[in-house]
Image 1 (cartoon, each protein chain N blue to C red):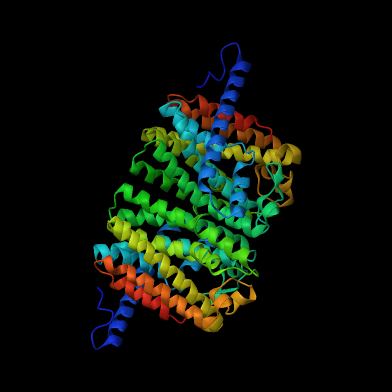
Image 2 (image 1 turned 135 degrees about the vertical axis):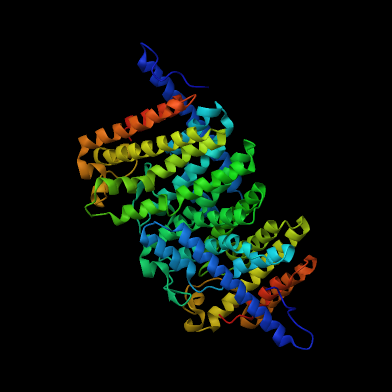
Length: 312
Length: 312
């Protein structure tokens, strides 16, 4: 357990590969925690909704948001596997946004993470209900995770408030609407940043800040974690848009070229691929520069590198 | 302010009319609190989602759930208008379930509370997003209401946990799925009670119990409030099904006869109208019998009477 230096002197390759190993360890911890949580929470329910929720959540995702929550916690409090159940909360909200985004009345996608989307597999009514079940489950993940970490009730309130704000009309939902509204329209770079902030960066920043809150981080640290999360979220979205254009469906696990087909507002559409790569690196570097304050930034640095260098 | 005896000796009519006046006062208090809450929470948002959320929530509803939360609070703690903002939380969850229920991929309803449904008015994508925004808003209503009442953080956690459980896959969402699944199929009275428990009674029971928790009620009182809420919820659903068959669209504010058109599982479909009226009264009487323990049951008794005697 624990992080190796990301770039060991004279041997950058092996430092990076140790970082990647550690990310895989953390992913395995999260997947175990997800299995346990869903087994407990979905027990005795209607098989259809339970299956659809499991299908939506347990698909082979990158788990960027819960990884960031865990790494942000570790940056202040050190390694502690008990953080995993709390980290599920942000993955559950993310899964819910994907189920809703893919619906026929929204982006109408048929492929996600290499498999048929939830509504294709289970029908639209069950997909709507599975989506609706995920938000209450996210709240329950906070409560269970907080109890495991023996957090104070006031800390739990802050975590719940943060997740509600990031998920709602002023966060993710608002960003999704701006995204739909911008389809086929000419928009500015500032407009695009606003869309991406809402639909992607705010939940990512909520993940990093929630990790800090759970760890009892100071206010300046929480503010740095927030700025890190917002910048990394914007970098993440720019890379996503590049991959959508460049990738094949097999690599991406979802249909490639969907953004262009839907007339989505993206950085590549606005500035071209080369400029978008520069933008994504600039956001990622700005993000990493925020980590100076932290005692143990290695995890967050490794995730930031992964976000920029990923190929799917 | 305050309750008159429901049936003043020798003058039953005027006792009832005073109860109804008090219900109207409480509704006015709730509607004011809703206006204030939404003005604060939706400020600066995309007009479309904000308008759709306002439209969904501010439509002329009966406000049964928040009235029950307020009356349950009063039953232990006495009259206090500061309970209204907390009570909004259960109305927001209810509004969200209506938006989703009415969607084209669900019950496909075009009329609700006398007006076009949210997706008819704003389009399906905005309706899905407005629905998604309502659950986080409900959590925020708890946090704001609790702060106004200066509740302890541990009490806030209990309220959030209760709402999450009642809204999720083991509560409302589960009931909605059973309801969809039962369309056009023959089912038993027990199955029907399970459907109604999930889709209607659990949120109503959460409303009464949350009022008790906020008031600091004892465990036996909370248990009585839970049983009251479950029984009243089943009575409420039976009356709703009777009204759907008997009413005209103008009276109901929604299309009448939809249950039969959709092949919905209802008490009238299973047992006939006359028997269903007996069932609804039996549930309501069982509910009222649970109120013995309470110091000030008048509000809850008045709401129970209203539920049984309402005509729309």
